[in-house]
Image (cartoon, rainbow, N blue to C red; front, side, top):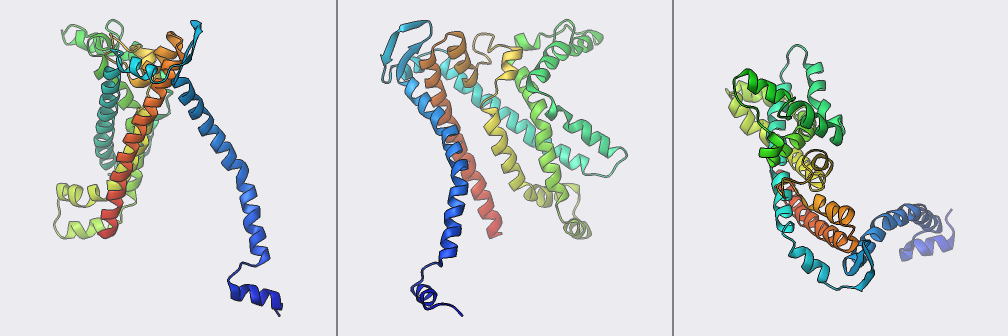
Length: 310
């Protein structure tokens, strides 16, 4: 039988002591994880903001102190800054387009029953598990090399002059390399989504006389809207910080042809040893990433809202 105090507390709407103690225990158990997360994210961000408004060059340690917005103005006037922003957006957009379109087509193709489908799927997703530096070196030395590469050998076999891909078409070559690495990721996510489609829906459409194109545009593609949004969001987060492929192949050149914002930060911080300017570039990179993230989150939320209304 409940005690009078418990009855009065329940009538007043207060939580019983046992529930209050459990809530407090949960908060204490979560506190280390929350504190670690805050330290892991806030401390580096605070240090980056601090150095971005201070003069701090390892080559000139005597020239230090508060700089205000001078670092931002100096980086803004750097001839490589705006090309790096344009190259970052171009690389990200091109790789997203190739990986999403190619991933959808590959997912539809590999969803069809055929002999050896399992091993073929394994081969198709294998590039995603290759380290970026290793994959970039394979493309640079074994495929795109103008003397020893397979592309040069194929051109010579056809009677054509070999092409120095990384020298004449650096951004196209970089897009090709990064797309080769991220296409399997999109393919794997979209293939899983296609396999979750209800077979009865496909059978009903076929009974109604829907052909392959009608099945693709009216059933498969609408079903893939949410997975495509997830692929775009995840890939964008990583593509905005592509570095290893550029470092191992073009080194940001020729000139600034393949210099992205992440590579510019590396060049300023670890080649020119200017911590203040590198921190300024890091702050601007965070701002750019957040602008893109807000746009992508709104796009995904709109898709989910339309699906919910449907």
